[in-house]
Length: 103
Image (cartoon, rainbow, N blue to C red; front, top):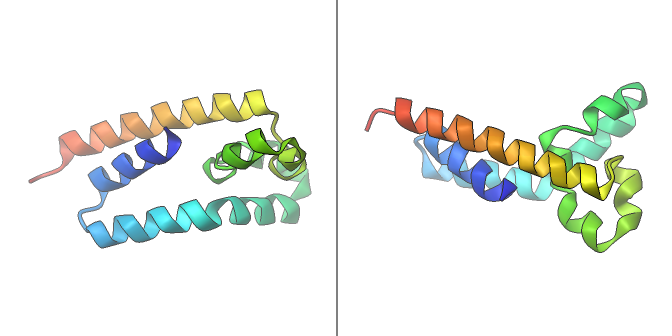
């Protein structure tokens, strides 16, 4: 759901399909890596940074391999809750942007 609502939000906000595809691929393939790097670079803020949207992508891997918990710094339940929250947030932003968009 997270990926779908992120895509819908981007499609509503950006008029260029190519840009949406590039941003979507970037987030999908590099988002979790960037999040882990930033959390490692700023360990004093790791508890707050763990809730960023790039880190929430780790749910796919962590549900299959619980040892990823050290990378995401979130439990499976927290990742599920984060996914639901970001899904709702991105859906609301996407709907707002769609209503404001001039065709």
